[in-house]
Amino acid sequence: MSDSKSIRLVIPQWQGGDNPAYSLGSKMLDWLAPETDMPVFHVSVREPTGPLAKEDGIPGRSDINSQLAETWDILKEQEPQRIATFGGDCLVSLAPFAWLSEKYGEKLGVLWIDSHPDVQTADQYANAHAHVLGALLGNGDADLTKMVARPLDPRKVMIAGIHHPLEHEEKFLSERGIQTCSPEEVKSGGDAVMDWIETNGIEHLAIHFDLDVLDPLVLPPFRRTLRRLRFERQ
Image (tube, rainbow, N blue to C red; front, side, top):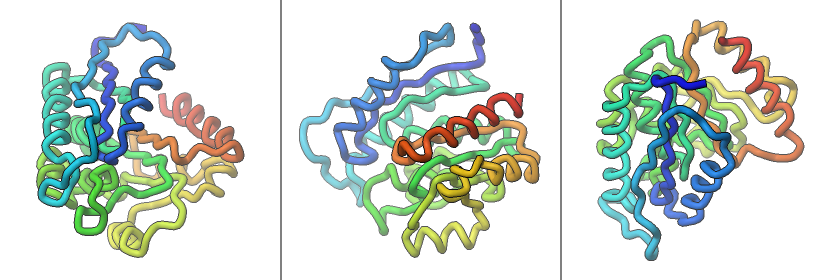
């Protein structure tokens, strides 16, 4: 179905994780995805030529900033209501989610399906793909947080699939009251996710899906939960 307010972004970013293989992942997702009538935009990403140098503590900072700026220009021009983003590393969610936060405000919820919370800073871990959710909450490097005019409300964020967070990550989540859902809870059907949506009055949902959560033992329950989200929240 054609919808001028929906767009697809393909961002083969690898610099956020300093891992060239992430670029291939984005291209494979783009190839595997069903054909669409929505506009498709490919963000320019430099091909790997060697290890990245740290720039003020973050590898590939200048490349990352360029990609963020190009993504933001697309979002401003298109003014989408819905965005499907194929990355790349986790940092590709920064600009689209920042855009949706400005658009929907308190009506927006973020379901972060990931083994890791991605709330670290450069002082704790250099690669920026681990900073993205923290930046969306208004915490971290200025080059990332400056894009987030309206930081996410921690109550409207849930991390599903998380396990074994580091001590400083656990402290960050606890201090802000961010809810989490373990792999075991997801495997049992994901009721905690649905309860969180209902309790917080979430009307629009942005879903970040990191492939590191996939496992033959838990994939079917995740699929059921996502199917429920799709049909019960329409």
